[in-house]
Image 1 (cartoon, rainbow, N blue to C red):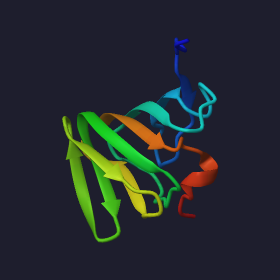
Image 2: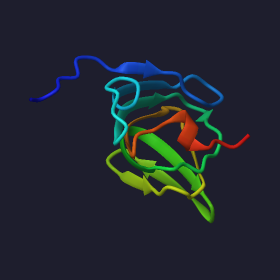
Image 3: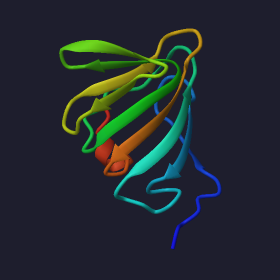
Image 4: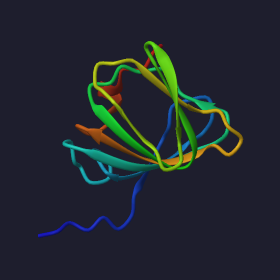
Length: 120
């Protein structure tokens, strides 16, 4: 039988500014550990600590630009583009442009504070 997700859970974000995270599917909202799907809205100038997660992350940018720093470079992902980051690889996300960014993030397995391994 299908499971209907009526509303997301709002998750506290990491970083220098508040970012809106609405988890639809994941450990908090649906008690799903296999995958998480969240709708994110990051303000201009937001940056989070670097991380070396135990999950792959698939991100689709809906509006604005998401900057992805990784060992060896930087990639700017614009509206209509997507990026895949792999478990075990260091990455840091930010939204440096004035409009911030809106995006969908899918983590496989599901995001967890215990498995994201943020920099100190």
